[in-house]
Length: 607
Image (cartoon, rainbow, N blue to C red):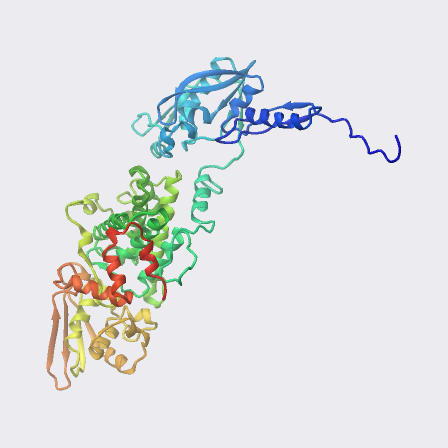
């Protein structure tokens, strides 16, 4: 060989081709054959070894068969109970069993997930067959499953029994495990001396740190998904996740305390519900009619949950909007997503563990109350997403011993108090539209105070419902600490109405006006045991003029309620004023006819 001759290539060694499957395209064996064919065309001199592999998921049995194991077909129960023909692989006294063969996603009719009821029963039946064939070493591949029953069905498939408190067998699926009381393992085969090797590419549990339900939920709620719009942003502003949008819009809708109130439940019905319906409708491409239907479900729920315990939450220092709103938000999200009833019930159960909302802001003037509807809206989206991924919640979340009322109010509330007349009597039709951006518990007094505008007043005595007194009256209320604190001050707000003849959002911009503070210091309150809900009380003021004349101003109830003959005009006028455009108000009034909510959201962008 001359020094100028090119070096000769080294003799080739063996090439091992060990591919996994290509889901939806090629099995591992097919992938190995195609790789080998391509390599042989390029380098026919290279010795090849084809060894299809699998990671415990779908294709594990096929890889074993491709490696020379014998395939055995068995008829077993699929994940939904329908019979399916599944394979296992055997060689000598070893077997390979695959969860995906009997209980996998591809076995779901129509591909529709059944996370709460799908069972691993068929996989247990495959294991039993392997044992009957004499297998003493079983490789069990756990990937690709359609069930989240924690192997409960597998135990049943091997002959074990899962029993409830009455000794009855549990139905298939993970949801039934909440009723598990005892295990009867007497029917299991003798597995002494049998080695079971679990094959899988992950070791994540369903719940707990790193659990599958939590991880999938975090993926769905995060990751910078551009799903929904925050109202009032600049044109072209980036969208956020639906959970983030629900939170932001819930806070925005309640920020001025100008949103509606259901008098019987003392809840702000729309603030925790409408943001969820809006975000879900945008993310899922739903119509305006779909949005309205989802909102109706949530509005009726939050009103009924609050009204079943009148003033009960507030009396315990809890904001009923936050406590009840998170459950209503979950129902709204479940309805918008078209989830089955059992999943919606789990979403309710999960949402209940987020119920709360402390009223301590009343003692400091802090802004936490403004955040409550946002927390509730986001919590409802979170609960529904968790439920859709298989997490479970108690179906007794409302009426149970440690449910919504039992835990937060210290007493049980019968289901009939919530459900009576459902579908016949609509509580959402009794929602009051606020004329003033202040606590609903003093609106009747503000309506009465309007009648005193223009009069010289020396002092005022306001009659107040017992349930309202601790919230809008009391020492120090005459001199609020923050603008938001002033919205919960009957003395200050009544004084402003008498002096100005109106109470608007701008009224609370300056809480240090000397003339308002001076009159507020001369407003007294008298607790009167009016029948009915505090938010539906009459308003009665007795004003003393400088010459000693006593003038009484009173109204039967506050304006904006369901019995207000001018309610339609009030709603439209408020909408036009707040939206800044009659066209925007008309767009909302025509929401039922919109094929998409995008035009509405575009119209609400900052000008």
